Figure (cartoon, one colour):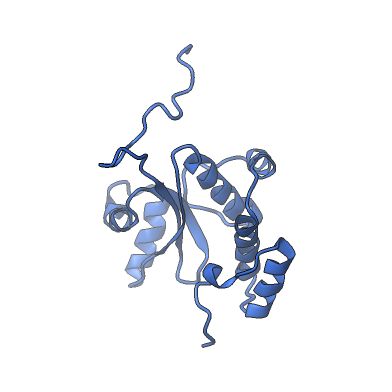
Length: 174
């Protein structure tokens, strides 16, 4: 259309003039499986919106999934992955969508997801930090049922990460 890319054309700024940072998050089913990947600048408000919007577009896959949970008296769990600036948020969101779909084999309820080739290219192009690579690998290991802390400590050593505790949901035995 000759208009070029609109990416980055609108930048939200806070009261202090600094760019508003957004959060990448996942919605998990009661079994802990990732079902949706999204981004928001207000996680609490976005979660409420997810719960309230199940009747707005009743045929949307996410609404169907959430409604089925609610009919069983359950709700999705939101996990905030991280906070990112405007220049990196779309890429990080695409990386997580691709990881969940192609790395974990999940059938996400997102409408738009990157192709497998696009995701692999993103993974190769992006200089992920050791912490980010460890986190992605740990999600994969966790999705296969592994819960022993020692396994995660060994993974951390392999990625050169000294402290694994911040990445754990809980560090206490049940």
